[in-house]
Length: 156
Image (cartoon, helix red, strand yellow):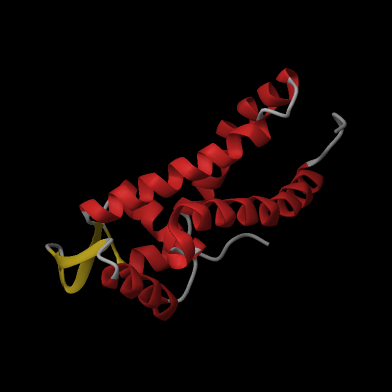
């Protein structure tokens, strides 16, 4: 990697890496959970691990249709990993929250994924690993700012 990368080149490289990372995460999930957890379900569990949310909020954060998120949520309810309860702020909505079984499952899958990624990252030299460690918080901040504006279309 050269020092003259611009934001567009970096974005292209990030897009090239994301499918690889998704396949590794999906493989780790299947190792831990068999075929019972999909990547969209895991992502929903991860968001609900932060805080209970409405179906609308989950769909907005995942940038998927309400119908698509409803299908994911229903599968998680049927497995006993999330529960619905009335939203105290809006009677028309329900809050989705992890159950104890859902939290345990999420933590198991997350731990397996970390166990899978750790040896891969360990193959990096110390300078490369340090560069990744420095870059990740900045990338996280930039992406979090974008996520906060999900009510509007993403910039093109």
